[in-house]
Image (cartoon, rainbow, N blue to C red; front, side, top):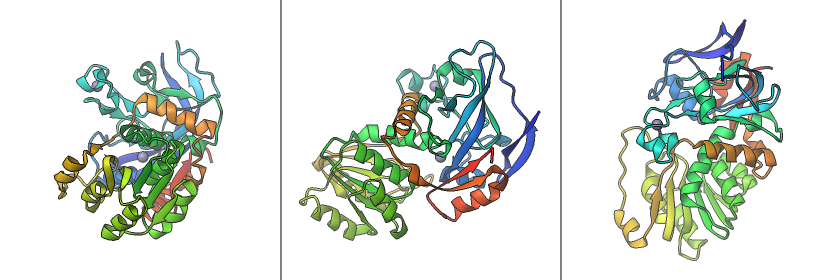
Length: 348
Ligand SMILES: [Zn+2]
Ligand SMILES: [Zn+2]
């Protein structure tokens, strides 16, 4: 049996192809895909700007939701028909990072949608190693597939947020109001932050306010710093999250933080880029600086829990849907920043 899949054959060569539909072998699960959201990383993979861990010939898609279509021999507790997604991180379990609880930074990391066939297809196989690692998450309280597809970005944002641990009553600055910044805003609200300042492009301030920002500014540089200081009694914010890879923000994030503040460089910056930073701001103000990349399986489970319980209501993020047959239209919508999140629906 064949199926339609979005296959990356080379740089700038992503196209729909008819490929054999995978069959679940022993210990494996086949998902029938219902939604796959697309992000900026997908664009970088397609254009060749991102090559690390990418295999040409792969079925793309790392933000997906589906339903169990069939299970292989020996698979238990995975009902056919159940809604499901999975962690995209396939870790080796024996490198130092895996052994130190950072399986998401595994030295031998393989990712769905990069080297393992992903979710932009009618069906996706969850291979045996992923099943053994516990990557599959069966959803108990069903939710719209386009929302479940956000599990992956939400899990990454949870990992970043765990580095800064927003406390009730904290003030938080989120720099950047793309989908990732918006998710950080929603999580900061959930964590009980009372002041959430968002800074981003004018067109993205409304969604920032809708998801929980208490104030949103289309400001940069000193004007932004002045605004944040004025609204925090001159102290700066308890938490600053950099959610856009803009080098000018590298130092500004430090300036926006209060004494003892936590600063998270969540966004990746262009490869090889260098920034000027004043290390004395970290030194004198005793800042705690962290990063964040990918997500642990526990973050993925937490993401599903928050999304399916409705506690994290980010359904407004998915603004555009396309049938998989209009893959080009979907990719163009992401490229043109037509909306917030764009989803393809493999069964439409
Ligand atoms: Zn993504
Ligand atoms: Zn490892």
